[in-house]
Amino acid sequence: MKEFKLQVGDRPYDITVKEKRMTVEGFNVEWEVVRVEGNQFTVAIDGLLYEVQLPEPENGRQVAIVGGVEYPVEAIGLVRGRLAAKKAERPAAAAGPVEGALTAMMPSKVIAVHVNAGDEVKAGQVVLILEAMKMESELKSPKDGTVRAVNCQQGDSVDPGVPLVIIE
Image 1 (cartoon, one colour):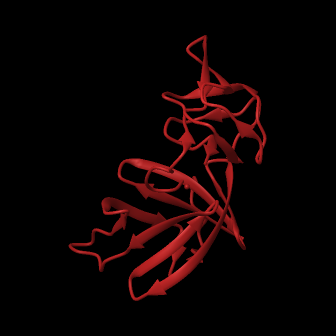
Image 2 (image 1 turned 90 degrees about the vertical axis):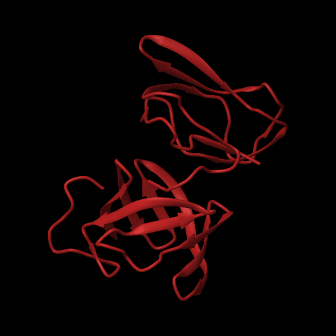
């Protein structure tokens, strides 16, 4: 098992990797490197494919290019893919948006989860209820589809932008 911090821009993410399971800020995902060609990779995360490029660092600055968007990144606590001797003070999350993901708009607490992976949902159906600043908000499915993943449970504290439910 590897634990490290991934700094993406100004945002640190705690990451734990064990075989083909990864925990990003407390959310579990399945992942696999599908293809490697030099510094270009195809990575499957919860079944969705991402094209990632890791060009050589310039001026000590490493970037990851995901879907054509450049993100400044730094892996803290890893040395050539291995955990550094000193454990990172805080482990990491995935760069870039996830297609079909419902996310919180601000730091929130999950009050209720109304779906499970594999459930069929209709557009407008409430899938999650969040609480932020003592106000509840419903996250609704934007389309008819199938729930691909549920990455939270009742009582979880969640950050904005982190995929909570993925609908395909």
